[in-house]
Image (cartoon, rainbow, N blue to C red; front, top):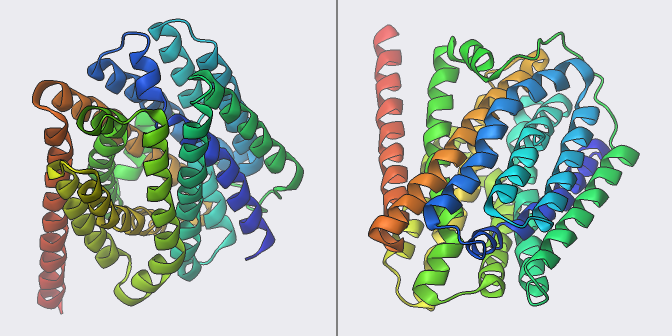
Amino acid sequence: MRRPLLIIFLTLVVNLIGFGIIIPLLPLYAESFGASPIVVGLLFASYSLSQLVASPALGALSDRWGRRPVLILSLLGTVVSFVMLALASSVPWLFAARLVDGFSGGNISTARAYVADITTEDERAKAYGLIGAAFGIGFVLGPALSGAFAHVSYTAPIWLAAAITIVATALAWAWLPETVHRGAANPGPFWSGLRRAFRRPRLRRLLVVDLIYWSAFAVFQGTFALFCARRFGFDVPHTGYVLSVFGVLGVLVQVGLVPRVVGRLGERRAFVMGLLLAAIGWGGAALAHSVPLFLVSLVPAGIGGGLCTPSMTSLISRQASPEEQGSVQGAASSLESLGRAIGPVWGNGVLQLAGAGAAFGSGALVLASLALVMVGRAASDQGASRAAA
């Protein structure tokens, strides 16, 4: 692995360990302040909506000023948000902490643009697989640490997340080299970035698919802890340990399976395969009423998600020139943030009104439908190509 790619990978791993610590904790932490499932969904949504506003501007600024300073700025914002979260005394304080994190949270879109700077198109899917592996490692160690430190108190894992993110900031400051590429991008608001991206038919279709995928995926992420608490009686440690095992699977898929499957099938087919596997896994989890069956269902869900994310990211990156990678990835990240805002509200609303299984089942149904649409679209494009020939 080349040194810049290794450093961005290590920076993301450390940062995502901090993020992974929060995932199993936040819903139950919010409930301790009296939050309902729908309020928990809105708490997740507040973070994602603020990211939606900030990501295109941060992506464009990374094109103009460089990836390194924007990445460091976003990491510092995350540290501040964790401190606010640990000191919170009410639900409004929880919302304030998540908003601060969201508005400064351009680290993933900036990292994607950084990877696009230092790789060729043929290398990109594999490199994005490494970013996915960083997520996997973060979701192995983060939830496990959350479970271990939650035995002390709810706030102990949050303070740990703040400390770990400081380490990620120091890594980026000390060792992350700036890419040579600079652009003349104009940092614009969410709508202007999307307008530019949506003028291109191919990119527009990919971005809509990306939005739907992340909305459905966020149903599972946003309701996972409450689903496990209601159906199986899990507390933060049990939820953290399950998510940690799930993260191990994600690492294996991203490192071992993604390059082979994408190399053989291409990004589009790998994405469709991932959608179908994820739909099967989450649909099975919705029907599972025993812990062993639930854990078995998480296997195809993990493999499917591991295939989808780097494949879609690579497809989107192919539609952008080197000078606009930050802007395009920022627009994509904003739509993903919109999806992550829609999903938890949708999922927790369904959970509160119709039960935990209905929340997972609705997300699985959307993923399966999206796979069918992608297959139909591919068949239509092939037919049009033959007619033109």
